[in-house]
Image (cartoon, rainbow over all chains, first blue to last red; front, top):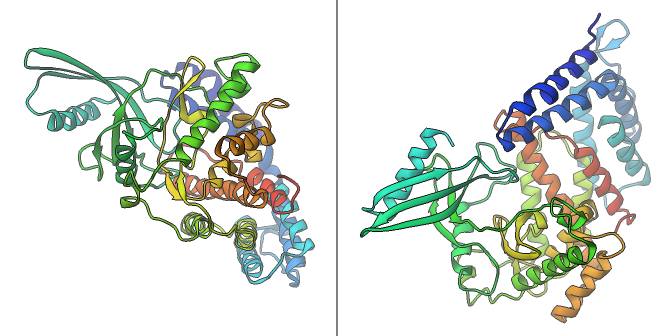
Length: 122
Length: 334
């Protein structure tokens, strides 16, 4: 449906940059508007990929931890529930953190996972 | 400034100046730049025994939600002790340690005329030629050496700062505690970095004053001369290589280096020549990693204050820092 979510976010960003910022005299407030506009730009670009990237990260994490792939709760048939997936992901990340602290030296596979994960979850 | 704040500030000043006439506080807009403190320049005008007085001052107040939770009393006491020392530190005037008078803890210090130009070494607002910029970069090293050669016992700084037995371990512990306190989710990359830091910590050596945030963004320039170093909130006693690691952190090249003209080797070599002290390269690498671990911890605090609605700065970019930390601990960046 138009405007799409991406278009709405982009529109809100334009309001901040083109209408609000030039009218704000306080330099501190203007700097915060710049940060907020940058965040909206990031969200507009990233949100469609959030769920697929999170699921991909869960699968990669399960592999590096050596655990069986879990069946993720679904919001509607065939589509994982985002909140449930985030909660499961947090649990896996906590487990990974514990494993890192317990090991002498992180394995190359673990480093590779972390490196790829930063790209997926940025 | 709001009128309510004006009134609080005027009352604060009046309680310190005593019975003076015609007291006026002329406030200016909140200054930009600090993410950890609110900065308010203001002028104070009053009459005493028929004589007019005018003083230019600067107030630094803790915000509702800061990226750094440090103690204004410690900063005040350190700066007070540094006033008659050979170091370009600002003069502190008054303190509201617990925020009972100004709403939140605050320091008042003398305001200097100099210009702040965060990215002066790459051009910034000053747009100096390369020779001038190299001269400023060299002065930044002198400034660092002034701090590292201070007689901190003679200045009485050990009355207000902890003397660490093992500065590297103390630094890891300090920033790990911040991460544990403020991180809102598991941080496997930071766990890996903490482990790396503990395995690579340099042995304890000479303890000096460490500023903790030396950068052009924290100095005022008078023309092309470095006039004063501001923002002493992370000052502590520790390993001087910590400051050298901070200014050679690969993430912050734009602030500290001039490509091809003033690189890490130039900076470290200038420091070594002028101090007569060799900088151990393994220790330097440790402190460069620690610099980004500290930035990551500061970011955790920023994210928490934002998510709890206590600050307006929207934090992004944790991924970039994590990426750099992974590379640094693999030896890809030096």
